[in-house]
Amino acid sequence: MIEQKNHTKQITMLATIIAFNIALSYIVKIPVPATNGFVNLVEAGIFLAALLGGARSGLIVGGLSGLLLDLLAGYPQWMIFSLIIHGIEGLIVGYFGYKKHITSQVIGLIIGSFIMVVGYMLAGAMLYNWTAGLASIIGNIAQAVMGLIVALVLVPVFKKLPQVDLKI
Image (spheres, rainbow, N blue to C red):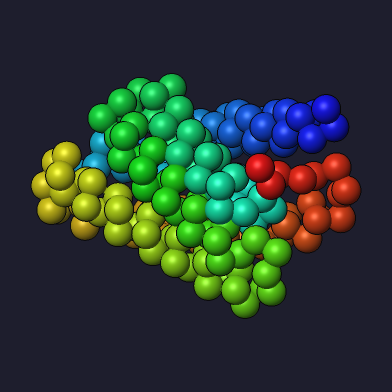
């Protein structure tokens, strides 16, 4: 019974992070006309969930945040790409960074960010053309760096809160 209660609490916390992540990313978004997409802060929530909850939590928050954000923001052509790209990004960051030293966390954040940048470059090329895919690189790097900074600042704060357990 206690394990069931903890599992429900962790799922609720992940759902709250997804909702907050979507709201924050929807409010702070910079349109990119070349790709018919936008730059936002979605990485911050993905990175936080992955570093605080591990690979599975990163996968869930990454995939669902990306998919739902695109759906709600009016970019349905990107939904499946975002589900896969942000899901893998969260999985990788959680694998390298969960309960690990800062060096391993940064390595995970860099690899996850690289996967996101390359994934969206390829998705932009598939949806539109190579010019659009290449045009997305700078914005996605900026998005990843913003998320990385926010996550590295907030992770130590959240680690001090005993009620924050995102591992499922």
